[in-house]
Length: 233
Image (cartoon, rainbow, N blue to C red; front, side):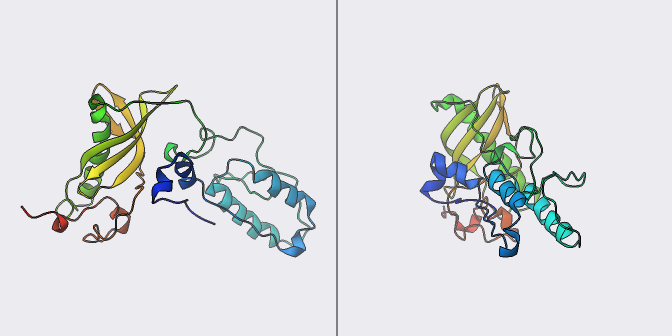
């Protein structure tokens, strides 16, 4: 079970790689003594082709613990609804409703559903959209009081700009920032020069080495370029 796909390297910048980042592999090996249960095996086979989340993985773990701790025979023909769970067990039929990023708890940055998009030719007029990304990351570093150790990030290049059709002014952007040359992918919304990042996670698509090790918070290393590595004036 993985929590994400390949995040670094040229493949992460490829359209297939971009989907793979948010589509981790999940393999299930059913114990031999359970493979006779044709209902459960059929459910697993069918559900393997559905849009799933790790909330469903969690619900499956709960189902395993609760079902096999009872002495009565198991029945996997019905969906079990639990108000305290956001997912559904993969051992059972999934709820009979559309499964999409809108109906499931999947944030837009992790959605692999195909939506209508328009790739734009990047011009200087789009720079404000790209600058929303370093502004967001600088604010994040300041919030954790690391702005004295980490260099201020600036837009180096707006590498890719895609407008999400049928929505408000929402853009899927890939930017390269300086210093450090970090490449990031996220979603930005706004108009008339006022833009902001609308998702809490901003994945980095290339390696960052040890340039952020001057701070203690490991999850912020991809965003921090320690000032001590800046060229001396």
